[in-house]
Image: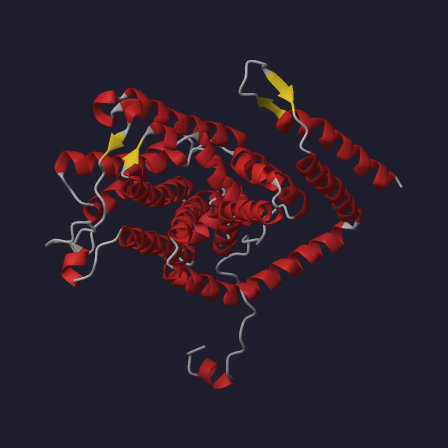
Length: 441
């Protein structure tokens, strides 16, 4: 009974907070603000809070030993299933452009961009254990580096891409030096300030970045020197292949570009995890004092984590600039850093598959939910569902926050726990007696 009473009180609190927050709207006339109650949305939220509170109380009622065993068993099942899920996701990603829908290709491009950002931040947060709240700064450095180099020197995308990554890595090292002695909350505050400093510099350095107006006419990537142009003449992909030019050709090419960059990020990360550097990152994450006592150079370990994570953030920023063909400081706010960090935390810090699944759920899932609500509104001729679907993007961060709270209560280490060492000690094998006698054991 006490659990039901607690859940009922939580639902009442949610009702009192949700109705004023969502129902306060501005009317077209001069009547000011008034409260509009949305019964369906209110009932859904209150019901979710009630059920969620009951589930949380039931979870807390279990013994800690049972909870640990259940978490470990679930993580092992997910890890085993990942061997089959990963090829399926990769095949689906490769086959997505064959749907022919520009909407799904654009959505897939956006999801892959956040997957790449999540994998880059996962090096810093998930592997090295360094909380970074200013990762958007490297994203911005990569985007502006490509745009400025392309406009100043007339260079193409493939030439500027490694330069943008290297410049972002340089800024990662510059951030790493001041925070070598910082941990926890202090490290988070400094990295957050670094992200805001970069954004303010982009706004005020008008002679270099064009200030709030941003940079336009950023060149698109080419395919072996062939441009995706609508004129279909010489030097274009359509002219070379003898096909009719179409906008969807460039959209598909950009999709495969970001898919290749994301797979490159994943491959490099997996290779680094099995190298001494990756094992040093994991040791640093678990215990910095023990890491120092083992003779590991903590300074170099932290700097390499910041530099490599920033390098891939710069790659993603360069792609963002060439895809949008326009960038401005408003595209690189703290919300972007919070979104990428939420993807890493929800997916599981240190888990490549978990980050990918979290990005698909958080970025693609919201779009799918909005489409589903719009479909229900059209089929049932009910404007309530259409209204919720149209307002869903406004509450994106609220949904992210609720997801983080639920995940921290149920699975503090994320959907797929990735704290298992990449290289672990196994049981020693028995050596044959003849090999020992020959000195080969």
